[in-house]
Length: 115
Image (cartoon, rainbow, N blue to C red; front, top):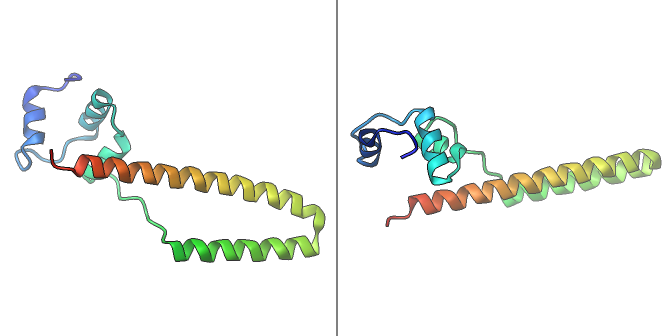
């Protein structure tokens, strides 16, 4: 499979028979299976788990953002337009990050399911 020796694949599948797969091995597996290379790196312990943000923290950040927005609007209406553009950019980035984190969690759940 994907340029990997059958012995290597067998050792990976029989946990404890080999050390943690190397990143280059994980890349080959991810490419062959159409999986997420980054997620495989996390599962193998080469990368840390992405940090999770809870709902209370998100609410606090949203309140703080609204307060800052109102102060800027009151003090400098011209700056408000620039600030609104920055908020939209940040919101889009947050939505993208949230979507990616959700996808990673779904992939992890699928990988972790016993067959």
